[in-house]
Length: 334
Image (cartoon, rainbow, N blue to C red; front, top):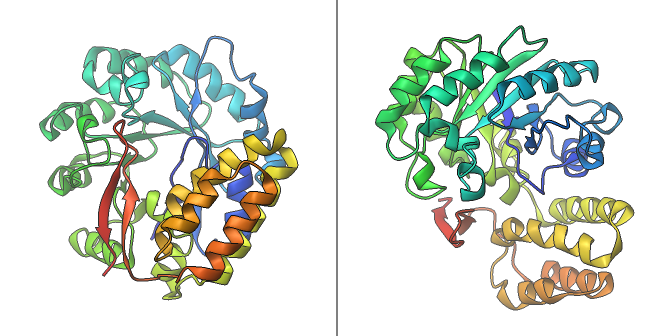
């Protein structure tokens, strides 16, 4: 089984990837970068270049992900990324957010199959690297995916990563495993599963349903529980001390490069949207973390939470839904 780490905008940049790779990685085959918004200016933003720098990604297989709807521009990016040493680039056909979809990017491309064909025709014009696709199964219902998959099959897609939800689902409802089964059967490219694997039991359920499945992408479950892959592969659960070491490493690295306490704390508070579910009776301590305005206040609040709140490896928890209305999706790990 190959395991991939899903991209998360604002979270899984090179600092996070390096910390995770050194402290927890027992089998991640590919790390996918947060999406790079394609533009006519090319790859020029310092933040993106820092994230893609080979020096910042040593010892890992990293796959840049591109978001756009202009295939000619994407093709230019493919050549630039090849010059930087990358051998695979991923195209984002799944981002469900309105600001992206409104521009007919991400999942918005799935609503216009003529534009999708035009985009892929230009993107796949003599690509210098392998090109994979990460996709949802449609905009409003899974029946749309038959036509979408037929289009994908017309191009030399190196790998098809399928999150079997439609755009309207965001991260609610359940993945449509019947549509994923159809993808497994009819895709000309190797298929990877992505969606709602938060626990060892979830992994076992998916692999029992699809015994021929050879690729899985982990996302929100891995952010919530960085030890999830270790539990899947080796049966070893994370403990509180390991999470604290990981937290401190990421925190220290952000503090070294971020400008001012505010920016560092914003990054760390994003992570606590996920970490929090590993702790019971957390609300009072978590509130202090969220209200912290200085590094000193934040460190004190975090130390207090680790000292006082019981650590839960197998408890019921809520996974951040990441939908535009906010909220959480209830998930039991038992």
